[in-house]
Amino acid sequence: MPYVVTIDGPAGAGKSSVAKGLAKKLGVNYLNTGAIYRAVSLFLNDAGIAPDEDKKIIEALNKIKLEINNEQVLINGNDVTQQIRTPKIDGLASVYSAVPCVREALLEIQQRQINYGSLIVEGRDTGSVIFPEAEFKFFLTATPEARAMRRFIQNKNKGIHENYDDILKSIKQRDKHDSERKISPLSVPEGAVFIDSSDMTEEQVIEKLFSHVNNLLRSKKES
Image (cartoon, rainbow, N blue to C red; front, top):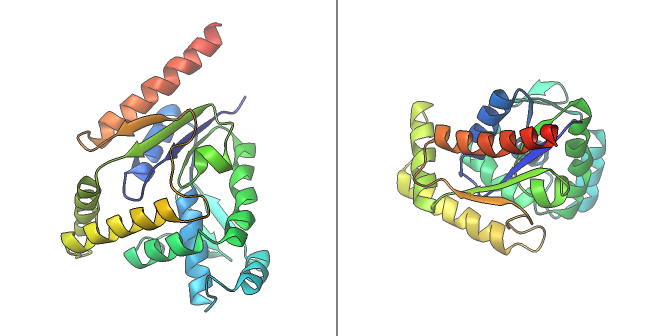
């Protein structure tokens, strides 16, 4: 039977890289729900549709063709994988993802992915709304300072020059917005294993999650 591993947590906590590493180690599929929201946010923003224009949003999303293939994201046949990885889109995604009609439209797309086998799912509300019955749930976090430094280094390696203080300010603002918003505020899903990765390497986090999942899967087979 296919199983689901959910990884929730704040922006910049390393959910994507950890999820990809865990999926590879377990040999299962990887789903980045945040990438879906970023792609839709890019699409709606480019179309000039504001977050408060519910009718236009619903009409647009009824026509959109969104394809997900592990890390690749396509909208209406166009590859937007790189376009959605910018600070601007991060901010837009936080705003659009708080809109009820956006969340409702994308929920089915995300849940449908279990039809293709076991999943490692990361992103907002994965363990509380998208897959509340998931067998394995984790909440991955780190201090704002640790997350800002990781983003700073990632951007630098990609040739993106952004000031550390600006990144830290953006992350703190995102945390505040995500925690205080009325629709699905950031929270720890019921039954989730809480992991603070501030002083851990990516490999250590992946190994910790892998050991937890692997041990429980082994116990199930033996029982």
